Image 1: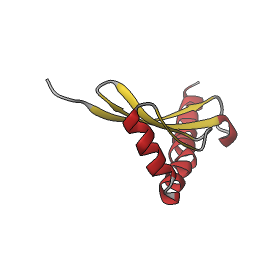
Image 2: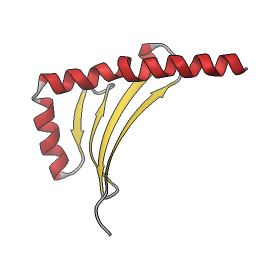
Image 3: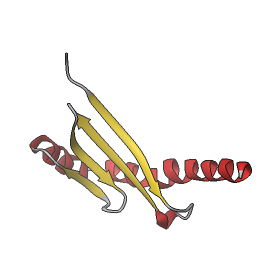
Length: 91
């Protein structure tokens, strides 16, 4: 019994090329996605009343947007390069 909040950071890709990578940040509460940032869209989108307000707040802060936009290269590209090398050495 209780409430569950969780955040998911994921990378969707079909190559190691930066243009083929999408970074997605999702914030959930009680199994409902409240808000999402997608590097393809370039801003936060809210899916609930609270999420829309939070998206407006975060989208108005250039430092928050810059942080999320940078994750595509810092988080995704870095880890995808490692995963690709590990897979290639085993094939």
